[in-house]
Amino acid sequence: MDLDLVNSISGLQQAKTMSDVQIAVARKIMQADRSEGAAMVKLIQAASGGVAQAGDKLVAAATGLGGSVDTYA
Image (tube, helix red, strand yellow):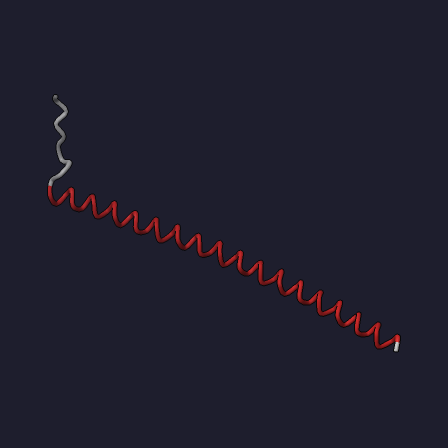
């Protein structure tokens, strides 16, 4: 009987250790995914900002807006 109890306790400890390892790996993967997601958001924002600025410059060039500024008051 004592050997069965020791084996059960040992098996339970091994299962707990494996569970802890799996949770740590899952946490690390989620942190990496979060970092990649944040980087993608910044990349998209930078790309859309660049497009908006290029569009503004194109509109200004096409309409002549901003071509000359009256500095006399």
